[in-house]
Amino acid sequence: MDRDRTHFLLLNMGHFLDHLFTLVFATVAALALSREWGADYAILLAYATPGFLAFGLFALPAGWLADRWSRDGMMVVFFIGIGFSAIATGFATSPLQVGVGLFVVGIFAAIYHPVGLAILTERWRNTGMRIAVNGVFGNFGVGGAALIAGTLIDHSGWRSAFIVPGIFSITLGIAYAALRWSELNTNPAPKTATETTAISPTMKAILLRISIVVFATTALSSIVFQSTTFALPKIFDERLQNLAHFLSTKDAATTIGGLAFAVFAIASMAQLIVGKLLDRLGPRTVFITVAIIQIIFFALMPGLHDSLALAAALGFMLGAFGQIPINDYMIGKMASGPLRASIFAIRYVVSFTTLAAALPLIALVYANWGFDTLFLILATTAALTLAIVTRLPRQMPAVG
Image (cartoon, rainbow, N blue to C red):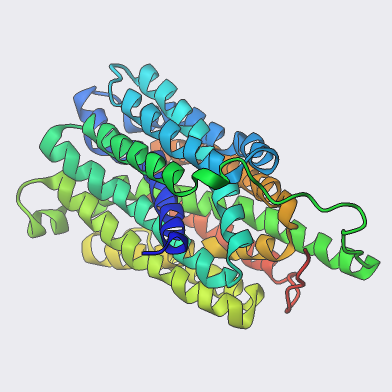
């Protein structure tokens, strides 16, 4: 494998680990700590909230540092830092210690999206498919969190769900540093004032409208994504018990984790379709389609159990995962190269602070009304997204 392909693979593995580390606790809390520590699931969610706040807020300094120091250097910091912080979390002996560990994990996790996507969209130009492939790896991290954590819980305890991936991440960090050693202190030089492309008032108005749509739909899409990916193991634990026992009379956590992984893995393929369609049709038509898919399957989900619940969950996860590359595609088309990481950082500050805000929403709704009400809220959120997306122009302008 040549250096270029290896670089792309390591960036994709970074996306895989980024989402795996941020969602391991979702499975650990649902399938292990709520029983081992006798803690209520809704209460345990509170200890994950600071980590998701860090995931969002620290994206901005991460992007700033990447643009001014080294994007490749920041990727090495990501791999090694998140690995060591995950290992430390695996040695926690109380919910508070887990919360502190998850906060540090969130700080390092914040590096990946503004930095990794800036490298991706700067280095390779067929952005739709590149972002889609990278997104699939991220989705496998989402699903892998449930499968890997569930398997490790059954066979070696919940602590190994943090420690084993942590060791793997440190190993990849060393490999990334070795591959990109000569580039660790280099970044593209910023454009000078004379090099900056002039933008007409009409184009500025179009870009402003697109920016409003991007950041509004980023917030709404993040509510949908966080609510579905974080809560799915618990939803399956409640809704798929008969199916899980039919498939396996033992290792229930592994079976539930495996079903969640299967849904995540199949749904992630939607990103490849979306990536191809983005390059051919543009974001407006594609975004409208995935929003409609979400509305339909969220509205169908209340009251369903076992096979029907599994089918409906696959439907709304196809929509949830399918939307992920769209905003990154639009930003990649508009953002200038020298500030690309900083612009992606702003997008992910909005995205991941909304993710953090979604955790109290999940806990509140689950504790008082159950998951059926959450599905109706998400259907409404998807409908609002659809209304906003109709304001996109039919053709995306390219700037910088």
